[in-house]
Length: 142
Image (cartoon, rainbow, N blue to C red; front, side, top):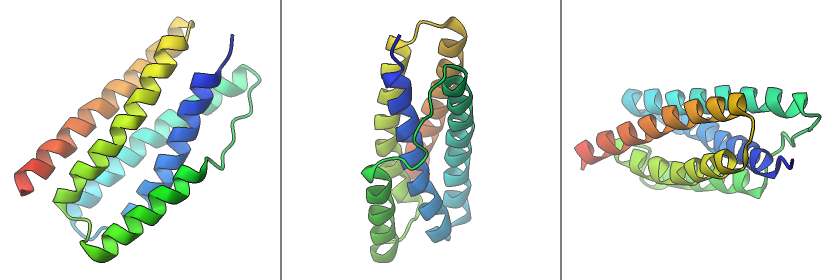
């Protein structure tokens, strides 16, 4: 069985966390900062679980991520400098998380182990709930 989808999800989590670390450094609004920290925490937990799953299978995922990690940092830095990271910016973060949710969907479709599937489903559900919350907060600020 190939772990390509799990490895892709792992890379996506590494990349997106690069963006969140930058956003957490740049955000000044306490409510936005709380949302960003919550999502980063969800990603940190999922990343650690994926590391354990992949290690148990003999895989050694790349902890450096991909070029997208740099893209995330650059875009967030530019946005913070130009318009700031207010509650309205949470909509952009939520939209970006749609890609992460798709990575979860890909991994869930390809995974056969029911325990791993349950773990992935829990992480996906928690992220989807937080994405919905960020969209609500962003809509309130419009």
